Image 1 (cartoon, one colour):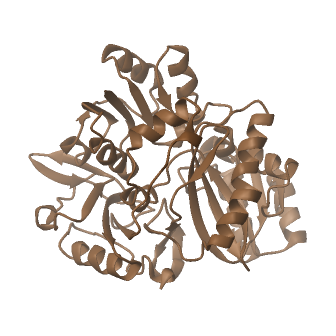
Image 2 (cartoon, rainbow, N blue to C red):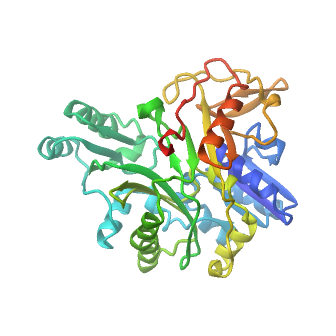
Image 3 (tube, one colour):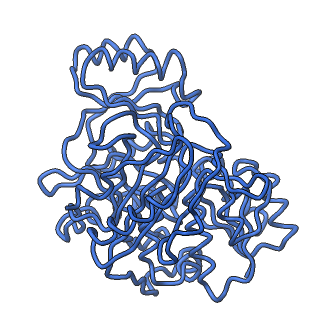
Length: 419
């Protein structure tokens, strides 16, 4: 079969790598892809949000199955448009994807169906938001309502930070139209965990748990990023917590969306905060996480194509999904200055000496004059698998030492919480 992967980051690289392992896949296209993906798929110069061009390409190449990586095309309705054209595509409809596209919608549906999450208030007026925070107090969490590439969340531990966050999101519009509405949440304490699951709208099958590292620097300090690394599985996600999360969060959300006329098919991602064994929802995403997909899919044994087809054909309950009984760690190598401004075009050295059993997933890379260069904030995801987390951490950082580019930055404590 011919498969099209939409997107061009580390998540899309691991998806292409996984699809390559399927005996049923003959050709893979990736739009727009990157320099690493180009080694395993034919990259097509079409942006992930250019739905008309993607649709025309899928028709022209008689694509059998399309897999969407990023959230923006999903919330813009790419699935609806492909299905209307009679094309098979994996991911939620525009209506179902609103649980990531609008944080207000997600919070309201959780409140309506009693899904455990932080208390919240919604504002369209910055003065009203500021007055509410003065009265409610800090710490609090401020979130732009719409999509902000994983960066529209500010944790305010003092009033000055909270006021600045209101101004940044609602007045200066640092996240564009995403800041037209603001969600102010109570600040949950505990340990974060990411739970991804496959669902066909009825059955929900969770993947191996993982933990992302959002802050730019060690010890969870510095600004929020798109993710500086992840590991799987996460020890905080015990069998007891997993049971509660399925019963109180994942299954109820899929049922709630169906009840609202928004049947959800694809991958659903719940970002949870676990405290005293009780999980609460921080956010829902409507696709594979990045960088969580890198360690999680490294542990998947079952053919990804078989799973996607079972989801699309409403028979997920009939297949068995198997996972390696191992651990995996992904360390992100970022451009100097990320998540702020950074320079591009830095030559990357050492990729050819990384051991074969380490996967280096490309996120922000390009090819220039025959060399691989940086082209984004998150550049590479060095991913290692081992019998346990300490072994995987050790392997990943040994490989990190072999790679270099001007200004390269990475966290040195990915996976440490698990120890």
